[in-house]
View (cartoon, rainbow, N blue to C red):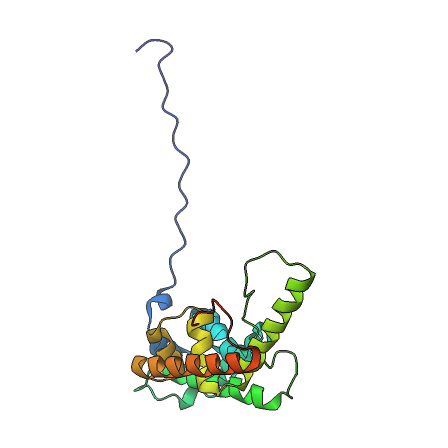
Length: 213
């Protein structure tokens, strides 16, 4: 090769990716066993796995996202405090969601009627048109009607309606979070929609073009 032959420049060393935490591969039940043995990092992994789903589930009961986060935190604290009571023959998810539901229902019972966050606040705009003075009043009235109707539904119906129609979860996912079967969820959802529609028509009357939720 000539005087101007290319010289090979050694490539910069590639930094190895940090090894993955092997505990990430463990089941929920195995992680909780580690928590019981004193490994608090295992509990952090459990929290990360369930936190977002737990907030959505609690919000279907308490309504407010802020309140749902508080309820979720309370549920995790209760799980940690009672970790030694967990039956390893059961699924952690069933145990956790039962605690979460109990915390959420208890929060609703402790809230006075009309307290901010005591009603479902997940309902978005009911029309896609630009707001105007008259339209804004109409939207506010409709949102308030939806809030009152959802608040008055029995908790088991309100929960499946919010999780399915407002959160977009499947019946299988809802069944896991409510501790029931997919068939029970479908029945409750059908009944919840029927109750909501009856109340809607009673409050605002049947409107032309209205479709089922």
